[in-house]
Length: 119
Image (tube, rainbow, N blue to C red; front, side, top):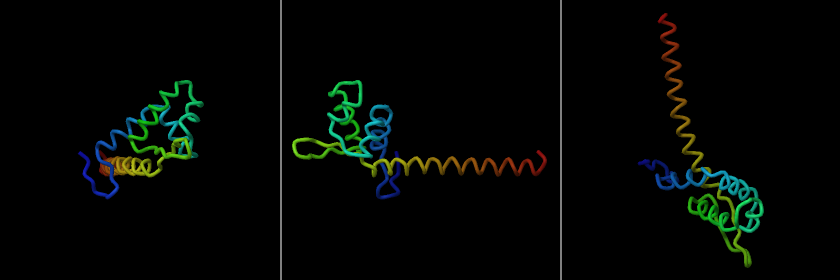
């Protein structure tokens, strides 16, 4: 279980949904496209060699993970990437990176100390 130390920290279920959603190349591409500009599902579907229904399902998974939002625009529903969710996931990954960098730094210090002792 993840301990929420920050007000916007992700909980375990959110983390699972985000990384499951990003595990698919088509969904990653949809996120990329919708971060640079809004698009309808029809516009998104035109870019892929899969059915409109399949693209709708991909968008639904991304929306469930908070990576995109859909909002009405006239008779259309436009899809927009959600950079806040990506920032929160990035913050989590940065914490893991800091943890590992700290471990590597301690290992380097230990190896240097042993080398200085002549071991």
